[in-house]
Amino acid sequence: MSGTLSEEDELAAAWGAETDTADAADMAAIQPERVLSQAEIDSLLGFENGPGSNDHDSGMQRIISSGLVSYERLPMLEIVFDRLVRIMSTSLRNFTSDNVEVSIDNILSLRFGDYLNSIPLPAMLAVFKAEEWDNYGLMVVDSAMIYSIVDVLLGGRRGTAAMRIEGRPYTTIERNLVERLIVVVLHDLSLSFDPLCPVTFRFERLEVNPRFATISRLSNAAVLARLRIDMEDRGGRLELLLPYATLEPVRELLLQQFMGEKFGRDSIWETHLAEELWHTDIDLEVVLDEQTMRLSEVIDLKPGSQIVLNGAVGSSVLLRCGNTILFEGRVGRRKNRVAVQIDRVIPRAALADR
Image (cartoon, rainbow, N blue to C red; front, side, top):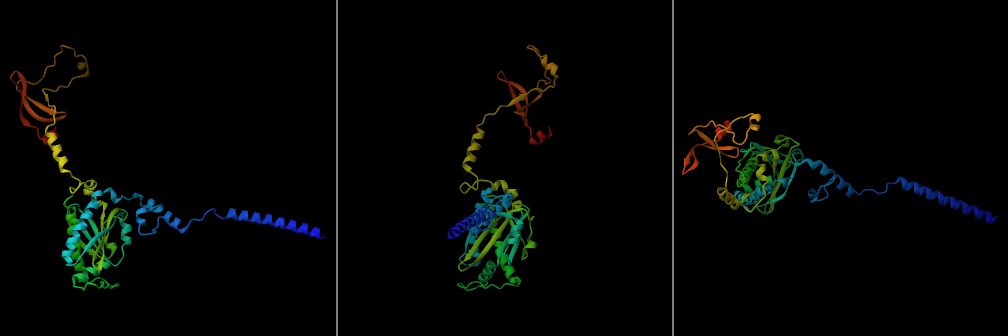
């Protein structure tokens, strides 16, 4: 009897083991093979994971931003902003009578609408116009910079942080002081572009609502330069945004590679090329006459055939280089050689009429 029970127990245990194995296999088939971690999901969607994530976007963010033009395709623009930092450091020291340090946080390309939606409020938005380029740019002064410049210009004590009073509109005094700062920065920006292309940036208006500072289509690309201004224990951020449409008139100049302090120009090669051009040999052709003939007449020409020219003695002839007519003159003889005396130079306007 005990033998029978032991056999039944062994059979039940074997069936139970097979059932557990089948259930485990079914559960393994239902569960996914691998679950993505949160870091992998963020990397796939292009979310920011740290301060350096803007430089290495991936996934969906790269697909969204694939239509934008990188500022690195305009090498001279980075040189212009570096020059702006040096000039601003001096001009702001004279403007505030304080020790001022200016630095560039980063330069990046983005859509104008994306930047407009990301401006931290409260802030002051200055719309300025590039006179020679007939287009606009945007300068944003954050609240920390506003209260710092007001505190410095009104004689605030050093060693104490600027007091911020949020939730109220800016006063007329604050707007006027910030406007003076903006005029100084725009003048420095004009000086920064001078070696490349003379341009005047003129202050237009001051806004506190980003909707009223729309100077370009929301989908247009723009270059953003974030500047950090430190005045000992005070300071803030100042951002310059230039749409690509504004930079289009000087796009060819901005595409140059930086070479020394000549802003893309090499005077040594220019002088050498100009000197070599004076020693270049060219061929001048004297056109005595031009006639229009039928193809059959040309085919019938044989050695000994004569072509009568319409030009008479002393009639004018044309001198040309290739297909370009340069001079008009008369055929003559000098020391047993046929010569041409140039009477006049054919102007370019006359060539266009021909």
